Length: 353
Image 1 (cartoon, rainbow, N blue to C red):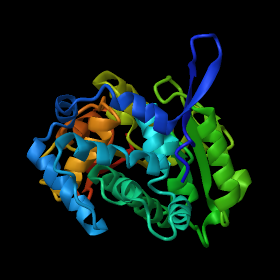
Image 2: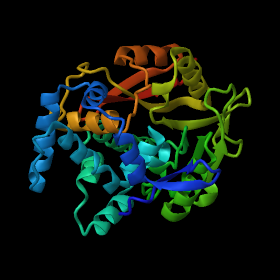
Image 3: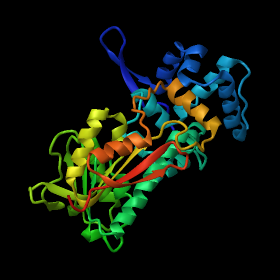
Image 4: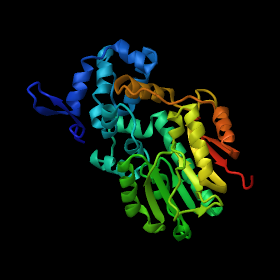
């Protein structure tokens, strides 16, 4: 895969703009790195990092150089082999389009074809080894299991917010239910909505395209609701849906914003409707089942080299449950991810009251 896929523009000092390949961007940034700054960002001991690098390289017949800096350099120079890593590096964080690659089987298969059936070391780590990414995949699968269960229980109108490209809904089959189902995607990013439309056109075999709607909207804005043609109308005239799905938005909201968000979602639901969301769990709250070597490499790559800083809120499971209950939800069920790094919540609007 070309290392020139991701570029940035920079002035040459004479007013002309030149493109820099990702490789040259990385080379430039590496000049400012020191072992101390990388260790500080990684929040792991040097010994832990070296052991992790050795364990990751060994299956590929490689050994880490004894020289400390050359070891770091060896791993850093694997970044251009991964389009995913390039995007993270330039963005210094995640966008919906980057996260979607964790769930896009076609993208992953194309990578294997590009590298003659063998992924690059960096892509293998990012897509199949990093614990936080495995937790994201686990949450995605849990959402889809819940969609299946709720569909069989009679749910017909689903709202995804913020929707990204709605793969959790649009990537499934609905044999026997399709014509009865209605999907709404709400996002502030127009490119996400366009991607969702394209995915619906390509992927949906059971649900008519006319049963899908994609809306610009802010989940924190009072009165955010789907279009009248979807769902049913309550006595007060507000539009309501059966199920709402929300991946990770609550993690970047303050407590006061969460209160507004949860209440808005509560108001969008029919009595008995379900709200499905997820949240990272504090370290150790549910115990942990993660590969410590992969966690050290994840921190080295994402925090040490790429420079991603976690701006998410840390909340205990009981705190999230309390916030949902204050919004009016009841019957809240919890499903921790396999790694115990995150929890999926399914909360219900009461049938009466």
